[in-house]
Image (cartoon, rainbow, N blue to C red):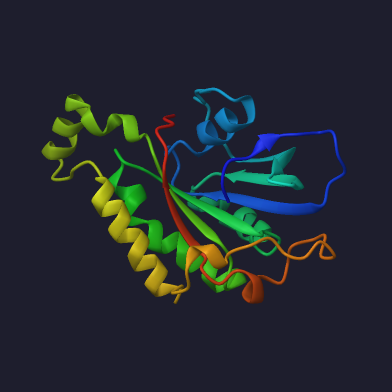
Length: 203
């Protein structure tokens, strides 16, 4: 949705719930805390489930975001799915130094799709700064794996778009009419619902 700037001076026009998803240890919590603080924030303690509320401004709109940060552990499956039905957008994360987190992207997308259907999904690659880390490259090679390249991430992004039948141009995405304070009617408003972004936040 672009870059948000913090604002608390005007009344809220839209309420949007965002769910962060991805395997444990990918850097989801660091991504969230770094965004909220405006600078890199390392998070060493594994997250079980946290909710963060903040006011942001996107263009001329003032938004209230409720961001759910949930652990990717199987034990938290019920907690995650409970929040799925209230989400307006999902951010699915993987770490470029963690092939398992990359390979599990389809699992997260299927879980979203089976619960809430057609909803915006942003695919985010984390720890991009580790792509040139020799020690990590050697460790992965010894395990028969490799760093997730930008090309592999882009390929996964295209495959997910095809899976969701998202063929319309990105420019068609837009916020709902002002009369709809709670963003809920997803299928009619969000046509092209997969986005791809890289971020070098590490955990």
